[in-house]
Image (cartoon, rainbow over all chains, first blue to last red; front, side, top):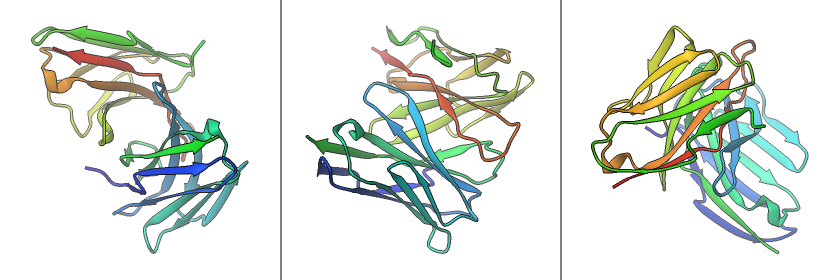
Amino acid sequence: SQQGEEDPQALSIQEGENATMNCSYKTSINNLQWYRQNSGRGLVHLILIRSNEREKHSGRLRVTLDTSKKSSSLLITASRAADTASYFCATDASGANSKLTFGKGITLSVRP
Amino acid sequence: DADVTQTPRNRITKTGKRIMLECSQTKGHDRMYWYRQDPGLGLRLIYYSFDVKDINKGEISDGYSVSRQAQAKFSLSLESAIPNQTALYFCATSDSSYSNQPQHFGDGTRLSIL
């Protein structure tokens, strides 16, 4: 069963614009992670935010977490064509990284 | 060289055949995972292993089996393949030394069953 649900399912923006992707989940978590998947490749870890954190930055990425609303958002600023990919949120309920539960993913297209 | 290597990258086979997908890693991680990805469904966990002697079923283990031959090797078998097992399969690893660690993925095996 899917724990995370991303929104929107697909997003198309112009290069230079910001991209915001959302993830909602159902049960308590220890951390939430965002991954990127380029076409034909495996998933690459982008950023992890713990349940006691509210915001985290990594380069052009900004992740927020609202545990009261069971939701997270991933913001990519000043997008580039190379950011075109699928993005997945994944939740870890245990903190021991025993199992991640992935959402269905968001397809981001960045037009040059 | 890739840290997590999956072989083969592509495989086409017929219904009823036995298939083995292999995964090896050079990251020294103790935990390994097998996922299946279908269009529109995201990734679903098939099996996971916390060490050589510890193997656990995931969300969709029916029709699959695994073997952890060594810390670095984790293989997935389809004993009698069926068409609805056509999918993209991923192996991943993680390190239990610290909590809150990410998983590291191979580039996947695209499996088609006719």
